[in-house]
Amino acid sequence: MDVLVCVKRVPLTGGKMVLTADERAIETRHLGFTVSPHEECGVEEAVRIVEAQGGSVTVVTLGPPEAEEQLREMLALGADRAILLETDGSEWDAEATAAALTEVVEGEAPDLVIFGNESADSGGYQVGIRVAHALGRPVVTGLKALAFEDGMLRGQQETGDVYRVPLPAVVSVKEGINLPRYPSVPAKLRARKKPVERRTPAPRAPRLEMVRLVVPEGRGKQAEVLGEGPSAAPAVVEVFKSLGVA
Amino acid sequence: MSTLVLLEGADDLSLQALTFARRYDAEVDVVAFGEAPAVTGVRTIHVAELDEYAPQAWARAIASLNPATVVAAGTDRGNEVLAHAAVMLDGVFAANVVEANGDEVTRQRWGGSLLEQARLHGDVKLMTVAPHAVAIEPTDGEPSVERFAPQLHDADLVVRVSERVDTSTGGLSLAEAPVVVSGGRGVGSAEGFGALEELAGLLGGVVGCSRAVTSAGWRPHTDQVGQTGTKISPDLYIPCGISGATQHMAGCKGAKKLLAINSDPEAPIMASADYAVIGDVAEIVPAITAELRRVKG
Image (cartoon, rainbow over all chains, first blue to last red; front, side, top):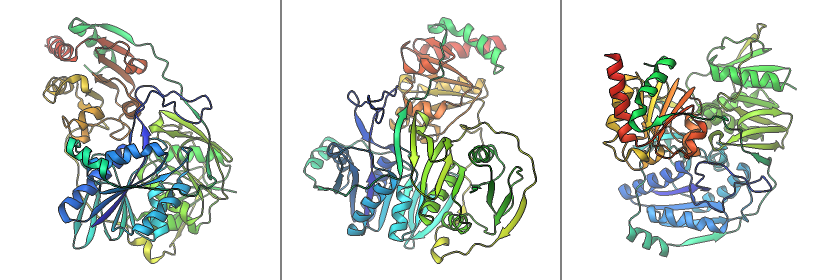
């Protein structure tokens, strides 16, 4: 089975959101980057499918040139090849992203396309569904389990709802569908030699146009320190009592 | 112009979406599936005659009503159906909106750790409402109910719920527990969670954990509190050895009180904590459990 997985490069945000001066992005000078969590599980799932029944795993991302770093990580996880849809790093809305990805999927014609249920950063909940419509393929979202039965894809959501759809299909998965492996050193070395193809998709004006980002006001709390070490236990139990939980 | 609200029922998230729509537009209609939800303050409830959940069929029913604006709760289904409807209506779809006025919306990113002010360009606008971002306002006025059988395309029923598997574990769920005791990397090992289990048990709660812990394989993903895990809103949340990354805070911002146990008094979690104990989780948690047992006799 040929599986194509779409992933997104996102910053590792840590404890506090800090914005750039123009308030249009997160300040990432001191941050690392990663693949959005649901999507990393999507790549792991694709690799497991291909390990079990043969085929190939292609990973695609739309992002800046530096997104090659995330594609290499996914190649180390076990993907065979990668395609980078190179942008200048500016924000593409869901429709523009879906249009660029649709073009790739049409050319590759995989049996299965896997998305993350929603990206960690913008959380738009629609790129996979838009791609599926453009391709005329069925799409099932939010999967926590995926299997194949009699040529059909069986997908299960965390609610226990089960769907059975014919292939080729599009799915989106959620973290927890599997526990992604840690790539071994040899796998990382092999990943350096795997092919990463670069393409330049045509940008288009966003219809969901970001104007600016705002860091929400915190709870403005000053924690009451109940003590240090085990000697704080009586004060903690007093708090439990005052809250009615003990 | 009127706004069409997709209601999955008359639950809190649905009523929040309804309040949002009534603030956005003076004229509000509802679309529902199977049966009319018990809500007031809207003109008409359009009830589509469809049995099992099929996202594309639901979206087709919505599109057949030719709405200019569609609103739904930011649930899995709300987001899914509106994404389908956006394609059918050639509309622009913004998920997890907290505030909207005309073409201008404010929506959540990063599970609510960041807000985006955005402009929607399109004749048809679709918005889901971020859970618990809008306070429900009372309504009155009985709506009329109109049943209809939507004209579906063949492809609309290809994706539908074919079976339901019982996934309940029988015990108290993480999402509903009144007390949650969570552990992070600072717990040190899978075995270290034994002490947290004991404390949670005494408090009538359950154990949760951070993403670092599930990634390490110490706990199952079903225990994970966070943006990509379970969103909780307990009366008391006790994060132990959790630094407070935005990924985690997105899952516990609904907690009414937060007691942080952490060796680092400068950890980001402290900015969200009501109470704090500074020190080693492995020493403090058993001491609290012992004290609780002593007091309870």
